[in-house]
Length: 416
Image (cartoon, rainbow, N blue to C red; front, side):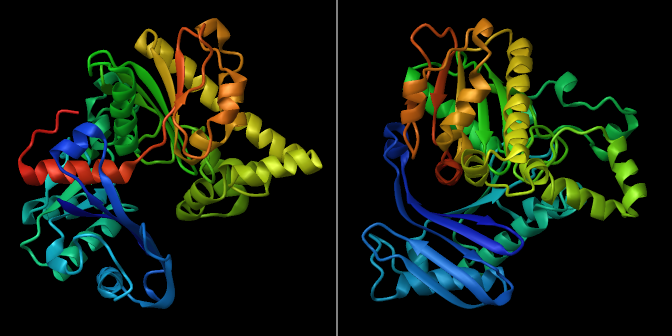
């Protein structure tokens, strides 16, 4: 089955074309046929970048005024005489479309086929997810317009994996009426990635779902940690929004809420301006005053012994370390810690600093293995004596989207 996977932001459209079926899912042999991104959607100078095995990389700058036009630009590329993708040359060659849909609130605890009722529910929940649902809906509506209603479409929710959190973990210690009236609670995000890591861990270790007890660290520009016990998410660092939890590239993570009021008064800011600071100007960028990219911070420390960059890195690793300890307590121990996403997969020194000092908890990292495990490599980086194994597992959210889409369209129960 040829599946188009879409991840739509307010001014961007990322896509992948993946060929999969039941056998490929079992053998982990799904095929990525093409992937790309269209940036600056809504402008006359949108940037289109597409890669496909066996084809030259395609790059273009042209007007792309909305997501519908963005999808048509992808179709235009497919139809080019120079584009060669096995089995795909026209709209009808796609069998299904999967949409990354960030927020499913409490209503959606798994991926679903998109219907008019599903769209109405997403629209009704815009108030609780104003940063995510509008952009996701644009992508869904554009795909229906471009491909028609005959091609099935599926919504895959980042929050769904975390709906197994027990009430004592997802509730905030504020008056209960705010949950009852407005559903204010911890939702968690990056669920598609954490779920993939749990599945891939089982493939690597031959564990059952019930025996999957791991701590998954998704460390990218956005970052979250999830405690996975018996294959289910029982706690996660992100909350009502992706702002809570770990220190991130530009997000503050955990913060005393009265700090916001204090800054607003001192700087004469409104609430929107204050939240923008916490979302886009904080984290390692705010502390280092250099960049939200870890590579820039490493360079500043190595070349200039920059104190602010050093502090940002120390804060980042310290907060990760604290959550590992907290989740080991919540889970009564774990079998493995799994690092993933851009930083987690490639920053060996970050992994080393997070794990160092946790030997009393049974966590022992092997420096040599750790230094080798970069650039998409997968495997164990802990010492043989480590009671808790440490893995690096490259994430593949798009593959999860494609697999869920295939299962929903084919009527196969999603058991993992």
